[in-house]
Image 1 (cartoon, rainbow, N blue to C red):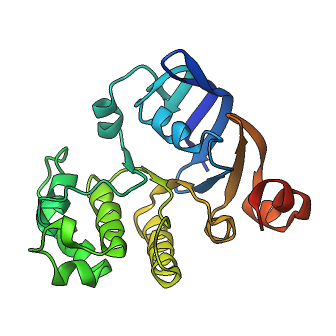
Image 2: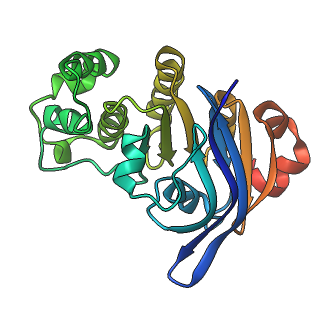
Length: 236
């Protein structure tokens, strides 16, 4: 498996405050990596660092090309897409317009075909295609946020707490779709998630952050089954 994303000694700052302290992380082509940790551990900051939404030091490369210090727009054009915590849908636009907005960087003629694809993946969105995004349920908004992020056909998808505030049955459906997308479209994913057991069940590898540093890393199966890791970091 070739390396898609690599972070080396990455430090991230909000103003003068350093929030990540020398983080190393790699993601292979088509790989699912989960990032776990308590609130305030630096998980969201890690995703923002990849997208260059915060000031960073150290090396962040995508397919071997340095993206640290670039604008977020350039990172997106390079093949990175993010579903932020809180979903971030364009609430005044329709479902259909939200999806088409997700493909704004594309110049090919397949945008319409991809909209139809996502309506097949999420039939509930198809039934509400003319409805404003702000009137959707929480689960439907998360479906829309994921589909919109994938409309740009990224090679790397970043997800920040995709299960937050959703019913367990909806969460399971979403994770099933994410696993399907990863397989069908060869999209690598970095998933920040509080539901450690569910996320580790989908991922190949995991990282546990503690106070802005990597405390534990390894194969997802080992992290899931290691009792000392579960008790100390994962809360189950």
